[in-house]
Length: 112
Image (cartoon, rainbow, N blue to C red):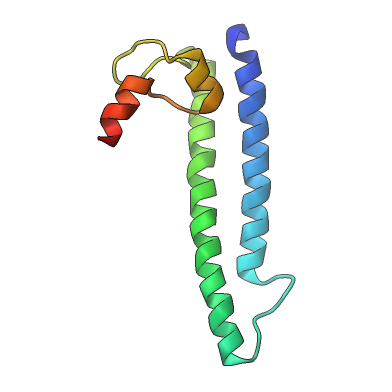
């Protein structure tokens, strides 16, 4: 859809950046560049860091899925329409959160 070609570019770049970040996180968790230390205290610290990285990786996966769904909505022609109330999502909201599928009012109700 021509109307959202800029949004598609932003979302595609966002997806590429997130996938790169996820690949780096995955490599860090797998210890491809730096194997686990032999010292048990150091291993405990690395394991703790791995838990944080795992959380960040899961967050990146979730965000990638939201971006993919937004790109699919552009293809389908219903990007920028709230999935709850079927009203247009404000332009400023789409600029701030380009993968959103909720208008500001419905997003506020979902959080509350």
